[in-house]
Image (cartoon, rainbow, N blue to C red; front, side, top):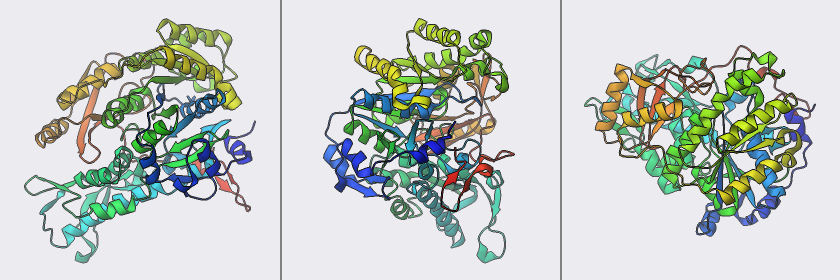
Length: 556
């Protein structure tokens, strides 16, 4: 069996100008990064902005498991299948982070015969967007510390610096550090921290910004610290906004690549769904909607994180109204949720499937709370039995969901025809009445509790004393109308990663709350979720190599 990278490397790619032409994008509106990657110009947006939007479909999934779900694979395969059915389809994906690529999961370009290419480029430096974000973030940190060193005109309290440095790599040793050691000229000694680039506020800002004007306004509002009076100090106060925007000038433009079957894919932005908001950029999605009849996009992790944030943050801010949601599951993952060990998932086990399918049930209910039609798809494995597939099919149809088996990993677009037909049928016959889960005017606690109870199924919410104080301060500063970005582990509906299936009788524990004033949301950290992940005992990097003639191996 060929690996994903072998399949990708053997693919015959079209020149990106030809892929663009299939979407009606002229060559003059492309900024080339070699033969197979391009950014879309600002001039293109001006040409298409008044066009009618196409339909918007969101791909999400059950909670991730070691058995795999295949959300990106399904997204790519569905886009390819739509093209096979004569639909003008565009895929809108997130860029992967180097941290997980070298850490715990390998590549993030889809899999099998449902991939975007060039996959090595995408999984590595791509067009440099994340490096630009890292640089803008750390420029702000440097200017902040320099301001304190050079006389501290703004009266910044070094004990109340909240802006963290970032790096696009998993590195637990950078979570808590001390800076400024040495001589007086080497800066003020203080504790500092790193987050992974994709969890940074700059990433979220880039993904939510409408244009350069909006980007600069958002960057300027970033709160970096508080002064000795307890008042916020912003990037604008440090005169950092212009330079940061200059570093992001090209990064804000969406990237165009292709699938193995040459379907256009706009890949742009990639914040983590448990720390930032887990979707690709507003600009990329908006362009895709203007250029296509159907845009297929994805949101990170399970529907309790990615889909919730897509609906409650991205759609709220950008005015998007999803027309359908595709919910991805696998028989193997459902059996894992039912208590089956990872090495026994290939065996038929209807009892475990019945126990674990409650996870899927909860995600169906959650999406239906937004009044958007749901299509459930099983990402097919050769070990799935007819009885198991029939059980899931019946379960979904009983709950008012369309159901389709997906074989896109093995067969590419052809294997997604059944799913594409169900999605088209849903778009034609079922109307979306999308609305966010909560209103802007609710207090922050009410928003947190609504998400915790309605989406996670929690009994209640427990706040640490520090979180209580932070909430009061944030509302006192006038940010109470912001949506809430819940930072929760992705493996469970609860904040305890070990509780699989559909946990009951649990509380959500809020240990810290802070405002991302530039991005426009409040982050609530739950449980033990980390903003800087670590590497496992055997990192994925250990299996990655490059040959003398430049061929990369091991990158999934």
